[in-house]
Length: 174
Image (cartoon, rainbow, N blue to C red):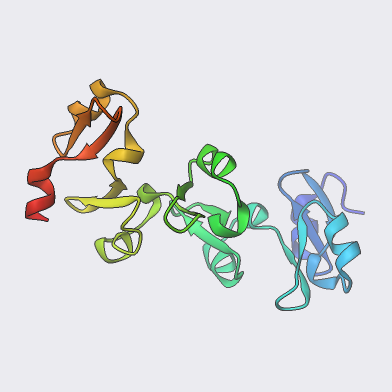
């Protein structure tokens, strides 16, 4: 009903403008059953709350994004489905630049580079470390060649294991 008129669609509370399809459609929160909800590409059924919500990727507002339980606001501009909810295998998880597989938890977690602050970085000790003020991948996850590994002053290449590890002197001062 609002074809070619995104502003009109956005102003109608019964409607939703999908950025991914560039079309106006039924607002997710007006849909009462899971089947109808999941048929909309821009909606998903939240079984924990028993209602239909907009998918994270459709949200363009930080506060709205943060209000949706399965979403998180990243880089001050991207609403992203939380990694543990989005992926359940390491291959798919590691293909998403926002996520990183944690083998100790057997779970997809937020990529170290997307974590703000040392305290939050410390919550992922198996995969992340602080590098000054930034949260970065541990050497083992960051580098897959000796050249790249040895270029980082905090890392060293183990030729026998063919893997990159944190230097011993860095570990002893941490």
